[in-house]
Length: 223
Image (tube, rainbow, N blue to C red; front, side, top):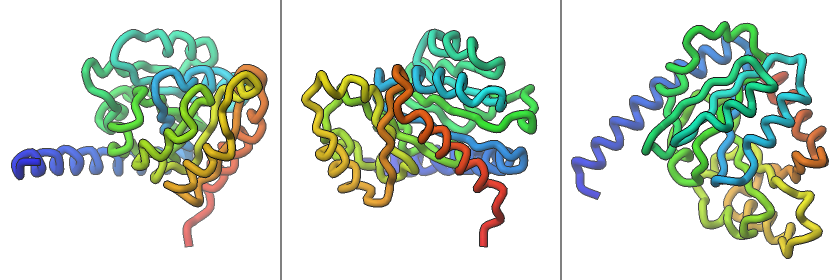
């Protein structure tokens, strides 16, 4: 990569990191667990969020939705929460901290317990951009290959949780669950893997318990 392009990329990432640090400070002060949800297109982020919002109510939760175009997913999620806003990125393949900060304007963050950021469907670009989140969750679907985590190591390496979605389809597919676990742990040996079916609710209790435990940890002073 030419030296000039390297310097430009470094400046862009530094600017994003500064904005993300300020967002993180605001989220911590408000006591919000901010979750950056990332996956390839069609892995089921919006369906998981629909089920999540319905299940954690009346705990207040907000969603920032990132897509190249349309507000289709945001409209679906507004049926479950009054705090849903869309970021339409055009040709940009990821959300950036400044985009998130802009869309939060006017929200009283102290009213919220959770903020979910549904990133643009992409397993490459979002891995490089901090959004001020407390945790990163990467979703893979059983309709994808078992070795996909190995093909996109940066996004798995920085994940706090890997969720395997659409598990109700396992009886009908040749998906090798143990091969998938090995693929994930070859990149990130410590990350937990949570099988989930938003359609049947299997695994939903474990997902909600994980979220609540991470939010509770926000109140514990670091040593």
